[in-house]
Image (cartoon, rainbow, N blue to C red):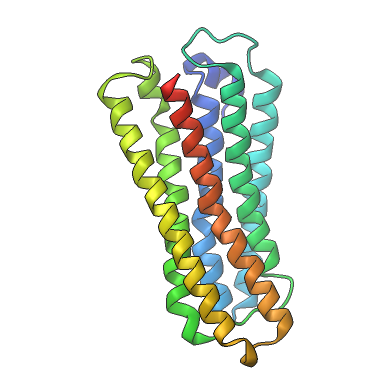
Length: 223
């Protein structure tokens, strides 16, 4: 990892990109994690949980270093508070991925096979939202050179609108999944039902928090 001072020397958005890159590594492992859970592979599940937790720790280190060294005044068209707010929301995405990883290692988790297709569709949609948001953060350098205006900013605003639609679709998929699971609750242990609801909520939060980050970027572009 490059030093924060080195990153700031290149661009004020360099540290945010560095942090978001680590966050995206966390979220990108969630599909593999859940595949291991559905396959009943507890050894691989535990290994992936450790990897996600390690990445979340690395993201925390970048976050803390950035907060400690962020200049009080930045000569650019963005407020220091905006950068700190974006950083905080990015960090919440990594925390969410780690929460999912810890939840699935609390006990042996089995999801009825009838629910697997709905679950996979929901999971994929949520991770897609997180990945799309990561792509937006990665392009902040290019936008800053045009003072967050012009065709680049307009394109990003359109992408944010698309992302918000995808997040809404993830909500619909979650509701369908939960309804189907409740229709089968007589065949599931109450504790398992409760745990899966918590897992669904945290997976949904990957998309919810990512949308919140996209909204912060929209706000920054509109200033």
